[in-house]
Amino acid sequence: MTLNPGDQIPELRVTPDKYLPHRYAGASGDFNPIHIDDEFAKAVGLPRNILHGLYSMGLVAKANAALADGNPRALKRLSVQMRGMGVPEQEIVVTGTVKSVDGNRTVVDTVAAQGETTLIKNAEAELEL
Amino acid sequence: MALKTDAVGKEWPGSTYQVGREKIKEYANALGIENPVHFDVEAARAAGFRDVVAPPMFAVVYSSPAVAPAILDPEVELNFAAMVHGGQAFEWDEPACSGDEITTATKCLSIEEKDGKGFYVFETNSVNQDGASVARGTWTLIVRGV
Image (cartoon, rainbow over all chains, first blue to last red; front, side):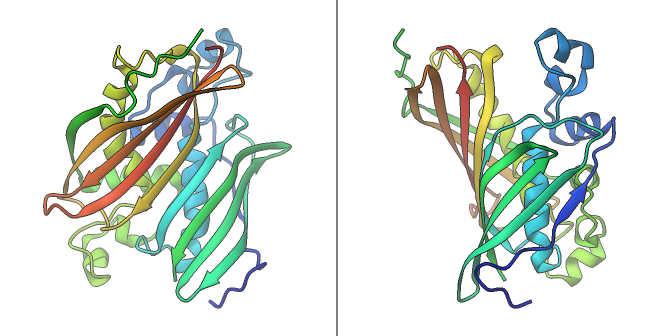
């Protein structure tokens, strides 16, 4: 795939199901109750149990790795800011724009959003393609 | 109240994580990652990896256990209950494969107050059993109301 600055990367759309935070907790080892206990989350002022920020970052990594057909060697650097809270059962859309291409190094600006809420912003991925 | 910054520069000894096939599979499944190199040892070897290879963001799995003692260190005095994970960066070198033993050391890079919030930045360095760098992480944790 030949990429040029300004190109959009293929969009990634994922709707995490109700139990996704539990599976991600098991996979990652992060069992913070705000992610897996709806009652606890509400008791501390959250709308419901929320997604792990690093899960959303994982989706950003996946959307970028797709540029290299999922080759796990391609992603060299990923830097993100986590902002809004993600929730299960609502679609997440990951979009990205190629920022620069220098030889085999491509830098992509990526955003993950859920409806009006930005989950991941200022995400910069550097890929070796 | 001034933020306590005594822990800036403090380093915590490495903690070692043994990478396993089933854990890689579990992580890839949670993210919906389908490349067979994360599931099938033959596919991984055909692609030039020693064994089933982890997706890059599996770095959180092997490096988080090394960050926890830093966050909970009384000298850091981080109010865990008011903490959010505000930013994260990784740089990757050698891929992490099943069978690897990855040792991660943590260092406190900075503690700063901005707009009534405390910004705690930690760095992790992960190396494999051959001493090769696997990943470097920068963890920005934000504490409200400091």
